[in-house]
Length: 132
Image (cartoon, rainbow, N blue to C red; front, top):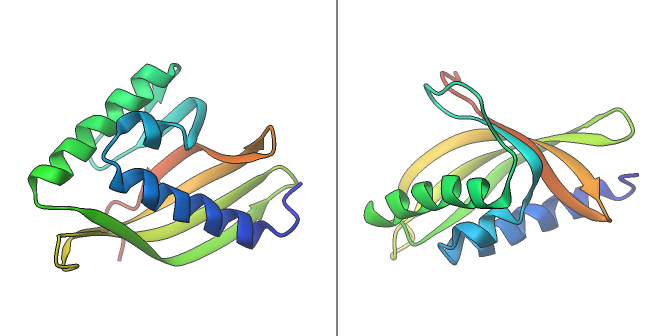
């Protein structure tokens, strides 16, 4: 199912960077399947079952990032593990960047990825809280 998955996952995250730069919650939400589960720092797991809920969730983060001076983002340290024949676990380190390209914030996050209609989408994410 995920033949050539390295390129597909890199394309997923490259497109995520472009979606993020739009600061449009709807565009970011399109990178996720439904239902979608998110585990952020200090939060209980949240499960979203509508595109509007996912878009509002990401829009709140995007608005906060923009108010902190963030203008774009980049990922690094991509690692990918195949989980059976239908899923991948991809982990990245995110850097939020200001207009001059300086880091405003950084964290690591893992994405459970699956393929829906030939498109790679995340169905769950976990922030690496307390990572050492």
